[in-house]
Image (cartoon, rainbow, N blue to C red; front, side, top):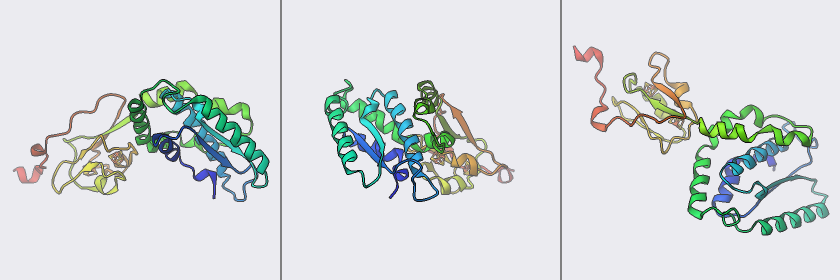
Length: 235
Ligand code: SF4
Ligand code: SF4
């Protein structure tokens, strides 16, 4: 019902599935039937996605958004014809850019894994309402995206502090925390989508989850060393 529902993940998934182009049609800006004005969100998402595409070497012209009413059939046909020709001109995804298929797939997979993180960090800008087309190019800059992706936070559970209360594992949306009763918890970095929930919910008295910007994450504690030895039981 609303272009605002088109998530960044949907677009990246379409490209991962081999689509050569993605078109999003939204209602005219400022003519939303609701108070949400989701078409502005869709526009911001597209502006962000086009920068992300550029970052991994894809041609951003493979993604287009246009705003029109359902009564504008001729305009729709014209835009679609134009976009179809553009995509043909760009050639098949990856080949047109000179990127090997598997390389592109793994870059897209990595971006998809980071979607919750990217949306969380850029939350404010994604909710902004641009009133002039001249502002579009400036909403997300190349340097900003470079910085965003080079400083991605990783989350790590400090084995010295974790008390195996299991709160983080229950709340992790990606089932990325290896959890067992009385066992120090461990984050599976391959599954982690960097949402930060574990950091937020770890009780302050334990404060066991650490944020690690950019750099490498210490290796996980081997399973045989994860058993918690409570201080009261040590005595
Ligand atoms: S940041 Fe924490 S809660 Fe979020 S996916 Fe990673 S391990 Fe799970
Ligand atoms: S919430 Fe904190 S203390 Fe509890 S299991 Fe997770 S990391 Fe350990």
